[in-house]
Image (cartoon, rainbow, N blue to C red; front, side, top):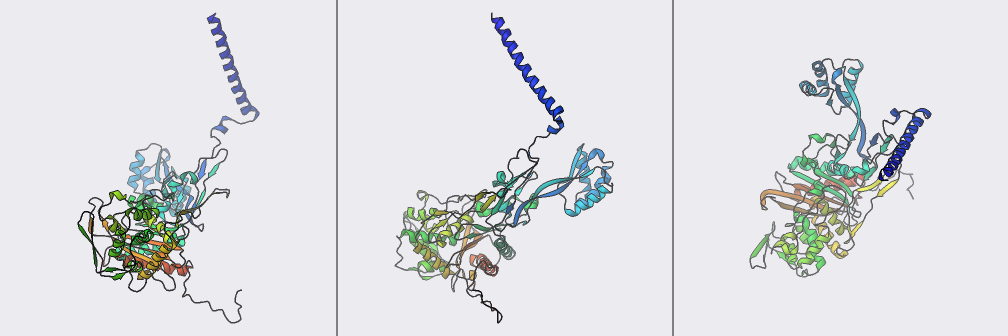
Length: 564
């Protein structure tokens, strides 16, 4: 009985198998005979054979990264009659050692890549020799790769791709799936999306020009710079020096490729006084009715009974909040900090974004360091008030300044303006976003701006940022740089910096430059970063990015009617 059931089951399985096999055979017959297609037509699945990587542009559509064809030179070794002779011809043309060609090609049996990417002249010379049949076995392979037309401008922001055209660093890495999506079914080409950034190459050039000038005069270890839309949070320019060329990324060092605007944390120094003063004013606990008298040093008693002295560069006399910023008085800002509750002081600092990561899409962005109150020593709050015992980034400093520019409203930074697919469909639109509506009130912001404006006037530390006809608000800084291994300050390691808001009466731009370890006659931010920012502001006026009150009205010839 059991064996009969097994036979029935086996017969059923055989029948099903036969039906499936017959169906497959009939399908093959239909495809090959009736439709005329062969197996060769299906050897390559109907999936995109190539992905055209999307472009990256600035806010005005100028190219930062684009797909481009290029040619590689290779040897089909079995077709090369004389490897030594071929190497002697190719080597000088392609700037490759002939002996290297012979040695490396001899280690292969079929194929050898002589040079991955040929220049135009190299291609023309080799192509002519191939056409004249003087280089048997030499082939030119058409490939597709990435071209970065702006070279070192914003290089660390944009990043680069590898030889497979995959994003490795920067926004090329962060937006890999949007720039180079999965292949589409049924098409010969798949197209990546176009990403437009908020960067403005006009401003990027201005910033980079000043960075070069600083390097030539002061020979620093590194420089960071950023220009941000004061009322929008748009990142309009960002630079890290030393630079590299993403077209030649193989020749660069890892340190050159770091986007230090978002990846490097440091103690900001006196630039930070604008934010600590905001915290003191917002808390409302310090006694500003009694002017502080600076005799060149300030001594206070810590909770453990010991005394600590904070020094200024020189005696400043009677100090108010505005003149504290004008003269950059350490003693005054520390005195008011000590009168302010620890938690309230820290809250304003963190509400400004310090200690948090801004999600702009730029890889490696860090949040800096603002330690908890329970980890503070007896002098932490005082030293923090003038930019020590905390870690910040250039992006955080510029972003925090938007609250001063916008009457206490903090804007979120962003760098992607739009993402559009190859049909023109808008996939994403970046827009100004409020991060915090009331970090402090408008009166606090006004006081800070007034003090920063005073700093640009006679006797202030930021006079070299001043530009005729433009109301500039600025704060300079010169900070000692702590040794990361010992934690102690070096005798000759400094950060010279300046932050400016322009125009102060209707803020549109925030500009920050930080210069690490300058050498030469001066180390001061007022002498290194401030004049660079002054030059940028003057150039912005010339470009029409800013309007100067001192600009002369255009005089029209007689008889030409004035526009209505």
